[in-house]
Length: 416
Image 1: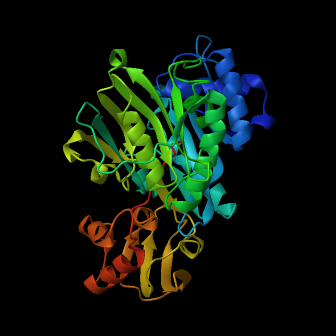
Image 2: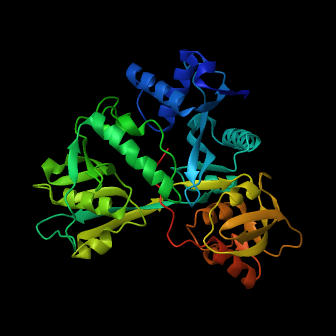
Image 3: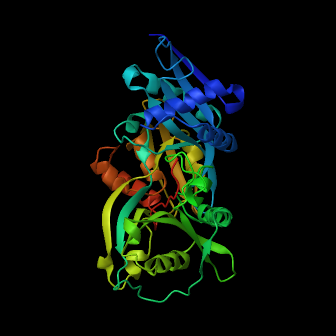
């Protein structure tokens, strides 16, 4: 079967082709047919975010979905990742990856991914990132898990209490005001948290309730509150909705620039009348909440998962913009089936900054996906060695471990 591969920006094509691409994504993720307003909003969002859309197109029979609806979709946009010490590095964000069930196992994803990664490398981007719905797919393309999250439930019944009182500086916000406040909080969060990924345009309408793509309309159930710092500026924000006739509260997003703001928002949520349980989908690994509860058993972890996956495209540049917390040196070889990051390198870190040069005779070998998991500090090199993703002398693994170790795990609050 003939497959035609196309790559375009929203301004390159007409609405029929753009809408066909949008419909294909909805089909791939089990959603209904898009309404006109949903398409109009999506188009505005992808223009704001600067997306490039790739599609695989096949001939369509008369009764089919039409020639403008691709059988495979793939989208990229250049956004930033905090690589430590406040550095925001441009990276290729990948999203909306689908292959129609009728066209599986024909190499469509391999072609789309290869084209996108090579294009990003040619554009001097050193990193690529994505979130996944199927964890077994992306390791073979060189991606490693780089940030994680925890799902939890908090019992906010009569016995809920923090170990110390937080000065109450929380105010309810209108939808419009919550957008401006959350943007301000996120800018601070993004600049100060290693592992943070830039947020895309859809967050504003989703977290304010202005528009929910799953509902194809506004979500009037969403409420927002803002925590104010001592200077009166927003330093925390939460969006939530009530469930179970008001006895349960679901957190859509809780974002805080510092621990005081985070605990202040949890204190606020725990004090809402009639609510007995707060459900949170993504609790950050650095949260102070478990340690601030008078009774830690009020918090129940219900699950955990990978959040973002990272792929190194250019080893010298990627390591050069990473903030290191220990000095030292190590030589290693990166194995990359796609050939984008393959090579042997000598990494020397002095005063937290790296210099990378070609090396020869390196005894340590890393799968490129291991470098993606090491990069932000999620996992220790010894763990990856036990998993077979790092091989070499114990002393070299020790050196690699010491160099990439961070005091805190990476924290991310953004999906895409």
